[in-house]
Length: 191
Length: 93
Image (cartoon, rainbow over all chains, first blue to last red; front, side, top):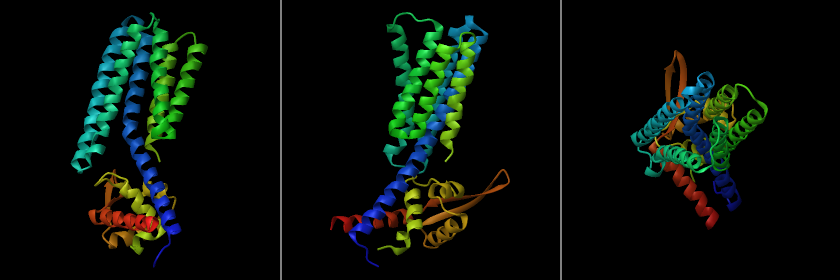
């Protein structure tokens, strides 16, 4: 059976579309554990901040370091899994790239808070949380619409809380913002 | 032309599996959702591809539940790439 140019073009377009969908699913699955991890850290850190405000610095320092270490471990695990099946080097490095992006972002946040005028805990928490949700939106523009939606919902919830919740704001941030990230992470894992 | 691969559903199956990393497996249910086909239809086309040596079908039990995992074989990847090249050649002829 011979085919003409038109049929070849249609077949190639179908191949591209199927491949793109499959690749997007893989990107989501690689990113999902990071989202669930940091959603959990946000949930615990904010809830503890609400319960024990004097311990705020210790809580955030310990949990951020733990989150960074677990992110490195997740990146290493993805890298090792890719290397084990003989994946091309460019793809193998994706796990490390995600981890490096997290590290760069955390470094930026620390630098930004050092440079900006002194902010109270509520403002700092909002700034840091919102930075991540905006980042998810920006990354989502490239990696997939679900990530964009997660960022959009997260940003809306943070702003609604900042302007609408007066007492137990950190508890709200932990449950709603952290919960949204965890839910978003599980959503990314679903087809 | 590889007529076995060129059939629309099988072409989608091969393209979806080819986009996975080498050796990676996709659950039957996931593949069915990605392709939006019925169990019977997918099963029939997978059997054809397996017979040709293009895909590997593995049946395992996870928490006492049967799971079917599918991956592209080396021969399958090579055949798919050759078919894509054939299509490109037609397009650019």
